[in-house]
Amino acid sequence: MSKTALITGATSGFGAAAARRFAAAGWKVVATGRRAARLQPLVDEFGADTVHAAAFDIRDGAAMEAALAALPPAFAGIDLLVNNAGLAQGTAPAQHASLEDWRTMIDTNVTALVTLTHHLLPRLVERRGAIINISSTAAIHPYPGGNAYGGTKAFVSQFSLGLRADLHGTGVRVTTIEPGMAETEFTVVRTHGNQAASDQLYKGANPMTAQDIAEQIFWVANLPPHLNVNRLEIMPTSQSFAGFQVAREG
Ligand code: NDP
Ligand code: 8X3
Image 1 (tube, protein in one colour):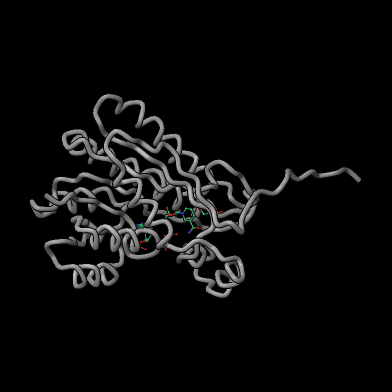
Image 2 (tube, protein in one colour):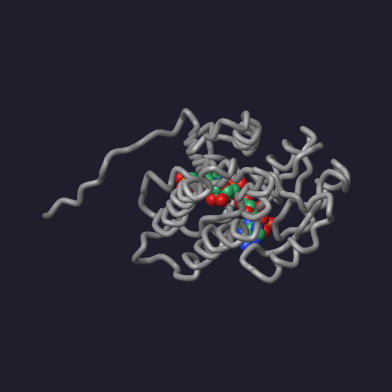
């Protein structure tokens, strides 16, 4: 019998590519995101028996509960939760950053992620399922302007390890994937719609693609049940580390 994956943020980027990857391999997929018009093509492509579209704002707790309650029976037994929906907003230094942007990131990347996880944990335990949380290199490697975004992703990485400890003995696997630079709609969203800035960032950088990350999610999910990848940090070869910065007097 085919397994079922619930993938958040399936309207774009990693989530859309992962939804396609799992559906093409015979998994049932619950695809979520706010933009319903982006989910419908997945249903059209793979069929309503394979993809169930659930359009809601993941920050809206009542809408999330309603979407879960409305899952058709064939999609209700979730084997894999891919917590992918998320965003960065802004690159300003903390002292100039927008509090609204910070709250949006925390509400989406942290609060919504733990809420959905809390709702689905009983089903995942029952089915000896798996959770894959999409964090970021920003969780581990700070950079100027990363402030609250890095903080949310540090939470995701540490929460994943904590879940792993608590789920000891249940057979439920938990992985956090920490990608570096990948070209999706991420930077357009981060810059509040500046496509030129996004194009400039990725120009000549040979960044990772959504498909690259979808392949890692699929690989982790399909490992034998006795193997658990705790953390997977992955970057494009073109990206690496810079040194500490020093502010000098005078
Ligand atoms: P995209 O902007 O292409 O996709 C983000 C997805 O998140 C969209 O499907 C969007 O759906 C969904 N989403 C955002 N806010 C909400 C919301 N309030 N309610 C429901 N869904 C929401 O970016 P990526 O694919 O790159 O990002 C996916 C994840 O990967 C994020 O968590 C991001 O932080 C992380 N990441 C990205 C990296 C990169 O370089 N691209 C690197 C490391 C991590 P919709 O707008 O339709 O609601
Ligand atoms: C996205 C990667 O380096 O822009 O999480 O923070 S980065």
